[in-house]
Length: 376
RNA sequence: GGGGAGAUUCCAGAGCGGCCAAAUGGGGCAGACUGUAAAUCUGUUGUCUUACGACUUCGGAGGUUCGAAUCCUCCUCUCCCCA
Image 1 (tube, helix red, strand yellow):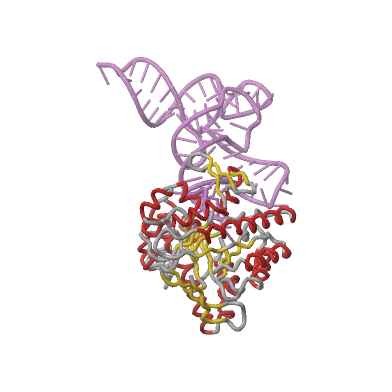
Image 2 (cartoon, rainbow, N blue to C red):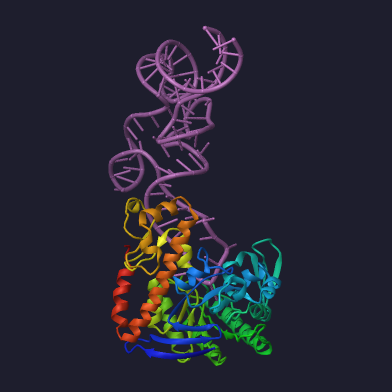
């Protein structure tokens, strides 16, 4: 994997770049739709490629390991072939599940024991096993096993959690170095910065993470409940330490506004479940702010979902029709909403690229943030 | 023609003397959702009021009672069974 920066914004830390993988190039800043179980929920791969123009999608180690399981993925020749997606894939390591499944998980120095949320069976994940699993899945970008530190966390917990993530990083990286890809393309390994909302911890984590000298770096443990301003402070601090010349991936973030602000702070890659999950639940992101399509006010609004929107569904279907579908619990409602939202997210990052290249990023961002912050 | 059951807040349906503005579910309305245990979850749903609270509701009309959705009388209307 290679990264080259093509444009710098003069007024902010924003930049444009190109990540090259064996499955193709990724122009950054980029939004990567989340496809936890080998599917971006509600969107088929053709629409994802042709309409959404997704350049790369995510998969999840924990979920794919439990189902369909390694045998099936290996038999298929890796996740790309299994799901019919020949562009890049990044897999999360299961570090987020250490956070989100805290009720059914035991954290140990060696790794994390999960009771499967599917059948209750015990599974033990270590930095090594998680790396191996991602080799078998065949992700282009493999994430280190970390603990997404919960918020709020006291300083002591945040520190020990962050330090454990660093120890896990060394182990995962060692395993990655000792193993080879299982398929005929290369893989890259990204470490993850933690440290909760404590500047000293974030600094230490960022320095040691940068020292690991991986081809790209991730920032984790944010947008977990802390105020947005604190999140931005952490991003700014960490980005000041992570190497300029490598892609920076802000994990799990976020709202359209979060993304624009973070691009300004020098983040290159994003993923978030928001466009799909919120879409299924009736929240439609538009250039003029989010709308709740379930609201009565759209009942007889036959105007397009979004005039000039990024997806073909935007002018093909009306708000009233989409509202009807979502309210009726029809599958197509979730599909259209998801497609619209994910297309909106990828449009937003493409637009950011264009503005950075034009040198008009900051004023555009200001205007967008203003519009996106109020309900349409 | 004979026998029986019932009418409750938008709907279905509990309640069967005070703890009932009335359970529960649905529907409606609104909100939440940030590396997906989510096609999920939460709030609200008689009127007025910021609130305390006040007021009008349980087919209709009367009555019993300190007090009635709940008991009695009559009326209206539904439904079921047998002919």
